[in-house]
Amino acid sequence: METGKPTTVDVKESANDYQIGGTHYRDMGIQPWDVVDTWPLEQRIGVYRFCSLKYNMRLGLKDDELLEAKKQLQCAQKLVETLEREESKK
Image (cartoon, rainbow, N blue to C red; front, side):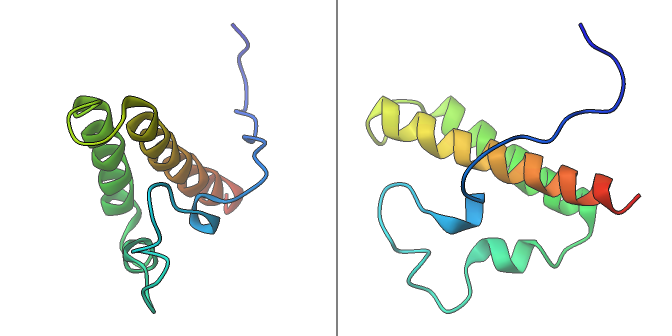
């Protein structure tokens, strides 16, 4: 296992640039993530961790398993982006 500074995740789009399973959030003037991103870091981390956990735990119970897994991945991506943004400020 490598040690040292974590690397940046290489993705083509930000988690904010797409929505999985509809457009209901993207159709809003202000998306929920836009509000959460104004909160203190600890609260943002908690929200994105919970979001990821929620989709992981309900895998296949509400939507198709693949759709739920993609939603979980998007929440994890948002968490990574939040942590990377904070790291770049140091």
